[in-house]
Image (cartoon, rainbow, N blue to C red; front, side, top):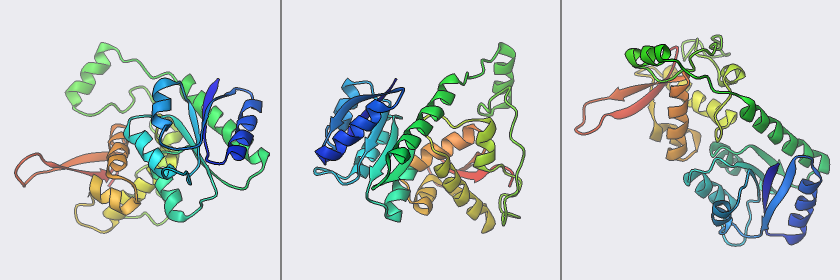
Amino acid sequence: MIKTLIVDDDPDVALLHARYVAALEGFEVAGVLQRGGPVLAFLEENQVDLVLLDVHLPDMNGLQVLEDLRGSGYDTGVVMITAASERDMVRFAVGRGIDDYLVKPFTVADFNQRLEAFRASRSQLTARVEPRLDQGDIDSMLRAGIPDRHVGVTAAPAVVEAGAAGAGAGAPSAATWTANVPLPKGFSLPTVELVGQALRGAAGRGGAGDLSASEVSESCGISRVSARRYLEMMTERGLAELRPKYGAPGRPEHRYRLVGK
């Protein structure tokens, strides 16, 4: 069962959403909250697989609830259900790994379709078995000095996207890559594409063709923490590569560029 927390300040709307959830096979209402402040405490005390989250809450913005949730390490599924459809709000939410964004008003069919899609995606992640490595595989990885790139998993073919010639050409797109290697929990394909576009743009401008987490954060409109998480994940999975920059005293600056450039 997918235990679902509903967060909406309108009691009538929250009750309606609870009825929709209860009527869906495989879903169960874990609780209903009308404010954002208690969300983290609720997650600490209860099993929650999915949060249906409004933006306009009486005590705090729902986007801040999302930011706090991700900052606290929760990879709980989140579907924003709100009347707020401003571009910056949507972009902010996508950058924090939401699973879907449903704009009010909507039909019951729309609601059911989004939640059923969430259930299907989670079922695929649960069914996927991570490859186990034998000692020879582990020794080879250690000698090569490279991150785990899914030994035993066939890499996606290289793809040259339209307009990408000379700017990361040959690097697999996120859509192609995830067809063979599903994203880890807590990461979203739109944000992978967004970060990839930023790195591709850096490669197209000449120079070193790499970016720091701070520069990716500014370019994509996501938090620096989220930018670093996505860059590290993309590096581990072979979409990007880490290029330490030495020169200033102290630790080297971590910079990233697309693989294939």
